[in-house]
Image 1 (tube, rainbow, N blue to C red):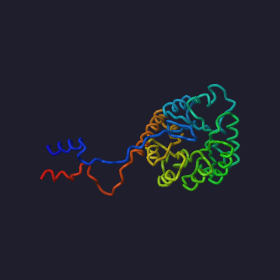
Image 2: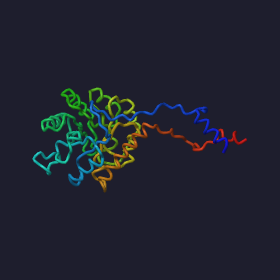
Image 3: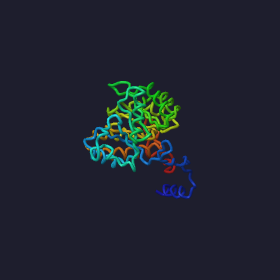
Image 4: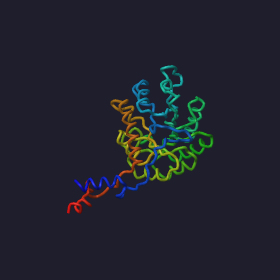
Length: 285
């Protein structure tokens, strides 16, 4: 034990070499279009059993932004019958969604409607190209984004996990890019982590994974890849215990972000002993 005590004492006195790794990365808040968000979890408002559950999930998730499908809003509803009644707009940024649009012109008109209704000029641009997979129509999404950005909207586009498409949307002036992880509502998780990583490496705007997350490990994995935030709806709303899943997703996003900043160890083909013997045998001789 004497040589171990000696090494510990010399290390404490700075006599032995120590790890000279780079200083830790500061976990700065998420910033989109000049606005700062402490939460990196964006959630939806659809598929919940009732508005009370939706509101509770928003609270448990600690989200600061929620999506609202403009074309599915019942604008005749008032008071507690209105979805908007259950969203604390003093703490939560509304993100009107163009869900259900199948061409650029439909999406643009829906964004105009959201603005006229006083919802927000922040929009989640979603132009669907296929009814079965609900994959986005990239060409129509680009057309709509070009117009909306020029009109002063803060555009967050839902797009395929295609680095080229994401770069084009960024170049048009979109405030973020939102590549899918898997088909909407599928719960399949990150199907193509390589592409997501390529998008993260190239983007100069926030990368928000949108669609396909099924459980907390999916959320953590997306954040470990370096994504800036995650948008989800079905994974929380259709969980057996939605409020518990909302909390789990919040913790997963936080853990994944911390793991990304910490820097994971490299993957190795063979074992690497946790307690290496180098230096030990020499001291024992």
